[in-house]
Length: 106
Image (tube, rainbow, N blue to C red; front, side, top):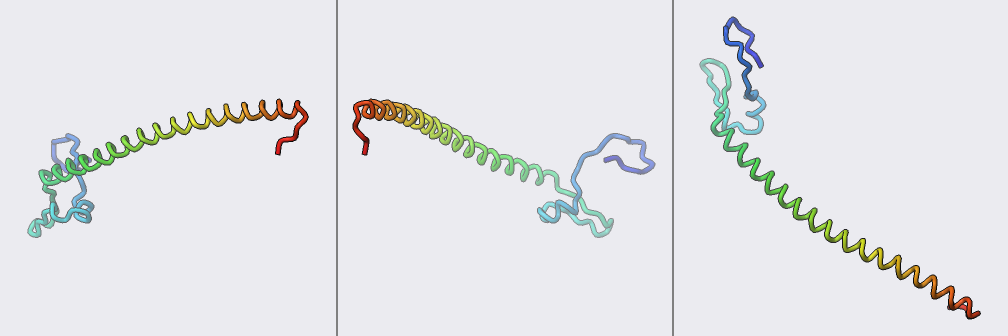
């Protein structure tokens, strides 16, 4: 955002809205009752953000391991499906041979 004021500094500034942060992390919002404004303790906010990133990374790592396990299981199931198809073809041929002998398959 940019301040709308007579200040000559036109640099773009980045930050959070203290009221929104206060809903989630009230302990890092400073309330200056004399000046009637809120401010943030950005040092503390940085620590919270880093911890959140660590927690997310742990979740990502767990999910990656689970995906690897599921892919291995899927590959195993694909191999079993291929074996079943092969056995079904072989059974069809055997049934054809038996039928050609004139005997009925129970």
